[in-house]
Length: 263
Length: 296
Image (cartoon, rainbow over all chains, first blue to last red; front, side, top):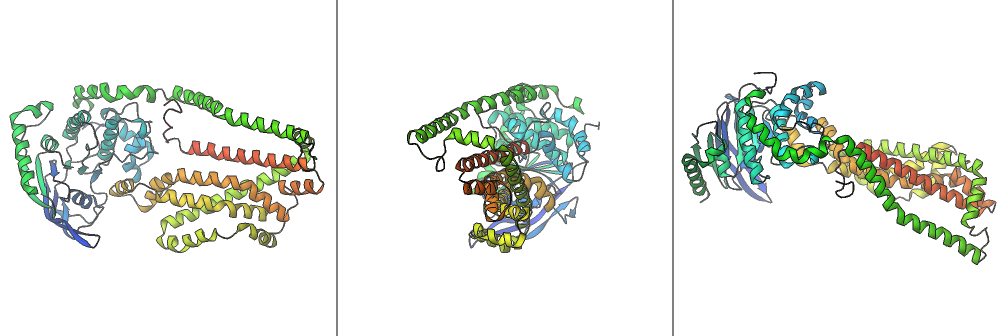
């Protein structure tokens, strides 16, 4: 890889075993996760889809280290993680750009927190800024960026963390259709170079089929893996892929699996 | 690496949203000039109405004083106030300097103590639970009645005045900062935690920047008390400053000089306020200008 490559080694194998999580919601116990097992092979793109209340967010918060499970474990390459905070690169639903940081400082915040010097962090980010369509906007404040640019900046921040697993929490949920389709394709292109393991949360069937190698379908309360579908559409995928009969078949299968999970 | 990214994609992006936004963001220099020009224009536009009213009131004051032949010892006319104050400027100027020193140092002391305490309240649950309620209820204490005590404790020099100014101005700064720190965005905190940020990093990277707007709001409220409290402290026990100047002028039946000192106090307070507003602007360059006002 040339100097422009993000500092990522190969993706890790992520394995989630028997996650249980129960909340106390106003005196009433709600089981968010009831024994969830999920595996993402190194460099695999896995989507987790489910209706609201299926514990998708809880699963992600546990993976990111923001919450602790009641039982179960999260393994990297077969070894249980002792400290999950900081292990995966997390991209939240909203872009999470800090309003008081310029683009260049927002995308390098992970490096800054890790104690990398400012100029060195900028050096690492600079070649990627162009590729992420942010050239000329290094010194812009977040409010000066369009919705698509904010998301690309948020994704660059996630990539620059240099983790072996990326967690994307409905990253395109708040965008309009055209920007969304653009960004999905762009995400695939960038990911095909970075090749980290990706886990994506979504409630959009088309998005899951278009992006993922494999899709886990979660059932609502209590959250369980109701189905697991392999999406064996060839890569690289493009907007034309969306028009193929194979794509439509996968969509139908996933939609049915989702319906079966809810009822 | 760059070559491996299909150019179709890169150019496709450039033609969508970059083109839309590049004009304002790339021309940052001229934008700033234009923004400054617009601000001056807006200031002129907004300053007109109150200035007109002010001039009318001054004219009315002069007319009424003359029509009703009010004694200058009770209400002097604005022309007399202006000329007498100007003639006495050799005495007024050092008084202004003294009071300004007390007010500014007092504000600085209050700011340092308030910010340290606010961070402690924000950082530690036990401090928040034990000290903060006491601090809030302590504000029901009439600080004015403390003034004689402060004189007893600190004498007649600069210290009691600074202390009293700090007592008066501390509260709005501290409360503003505490609330600002607490207003930090939960999602941003969570995001930085997933990156492995320590508590201290969360404080410096998120909580303190989040608190700045409300800190400045508190500081702006505080500076409007600064001169008043310094003058009050001088009334109680001082040898120089605007408070003493007003008292001496009053005792000599020079009401016009009392008026002059009042106007000087108002102008000084306004100046201090503008300094803080300027600091705020400089400290928060990332704030989005109000749409339609700065030409954005």
